[in-house]
Image 1 (cartoon, rainbow over the protein chains, first blue to last red):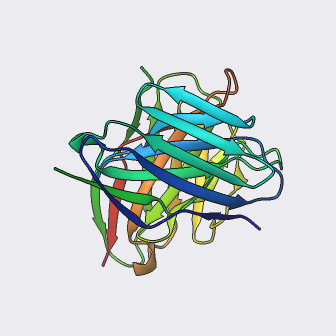
Image 2 (image 1 turned 180 degrees about the horizontal axis):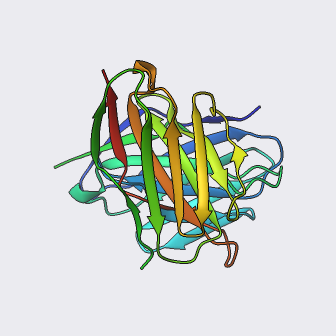
Image 3 (image 1 turned 60 degrees about the horizontal axis):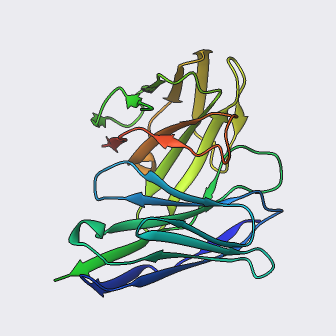
Length: 111
Length: 114
């Protein structure tokens, strides 16, 4: 089966750095995605990793280790508008084009 | 910009009613998906389609059916709504081109079944 774990909630301070972890166990692996979802809104795509290593995109970076079944999303220079849920999702190796999502991490940025 | 629209933001239906949720995308994407999102459970895949008239069951298809008669439109049908189908329903689409086939989501329909 599929299992994706991430912390339920995190709190961080404006201007700081926060790391949101995601571990997964899936039947095969064909890419890991991070999405941001503000309350009451649709998820929006943040990043995609299919090879090991770090992908940087402005204030956001995402890391993947396939051998460990582990990823993290790093948010730098936190802003109040970064308060949102962050969803980790994996495309498995079964040829499905759909994603399996974790339950999401709700991040609260405090002044 | 990719645009995925859903027919209603909020919907209230009675137990036993037949419910149609419509989703339209304007980017000529091959793939379309229906998820439901519940607190503590994340997004769970109900059905997906990778071509017109093609459909595949996701992880929780029971109580639902889908229809894809045109490439841009993917409908979710609750044949006989039940209270445990009260949820947020999200539609998404993706292309088979590009690097990761990331999914683009619609705004969601919050369905309440009373």
